[in-house]
Amino acid sequence: MSVILLKSVCKSYLSGDGRLHVLKQTDLDIKKADFAVVAGPSGSGKSTLLNLIGGLDRPDSGLIEIDGVELSRLTDSKQAAFRNQKIGFVFQSFHLIPVLTAAENVAWPLYIKGVNRKQRMLRARELLSNFGLATHIDKQPDKLSGGQCQRVAIARALACEPQIVLADEPTANLDHKTSVEIMDLLCSLNKESDVTFLFSTHDQMVASYAKRHLYLEDGKLIENAVDAHIDEGVGCV
Image (spheres, rainbow, N blue to C red):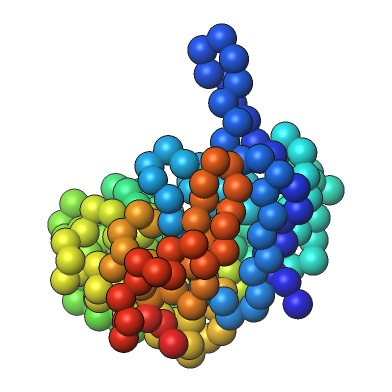
């Protein structure tokens, strides 16, 4: 069954005196436990695509279904609740809340969901310990390295046990060693928990981990377009 399905999705924005057409009749079919990458240059629409899939934005036209539910049929409040239940987000700039500790940041989606404090903090501490951050649970983001902040962000994305994780340039602000560690972590989660991952990147090293390769070009997705540029022997397989 498709967990992410797009049919003829179009999205444009006002730009100067006209409209910028970012996505044009875009189709996409992502199955359960896929580990897929969307590559393409900066400004090609990768972030727009992920925001539409995550219900953070609405398309001009076309169908978007997540786990069989058509997003356009949901009100904003129901869409937010659905997103909190089904989808986790990992952003390139982390988007951690600076006044909260690492554990409190991870627990935030559970707070929104209405989970009591004892349970949500237990879940947060468990995730952070699994990600090697047991000694950093009570630290605020400004006391953590970039790699540690991204691990906190990934833990937060998984707090509600989502079926889908969307990652927008998850290693863009990290050095090569830390990027490899983050991608290894995402691969392990994909294998062990059957979490479906869709992430954007313009980094060939990051793209080399994917099972499926998509390229966003002129507003449309092309399957396997980047395979020829991926080094063999690397990947989430």
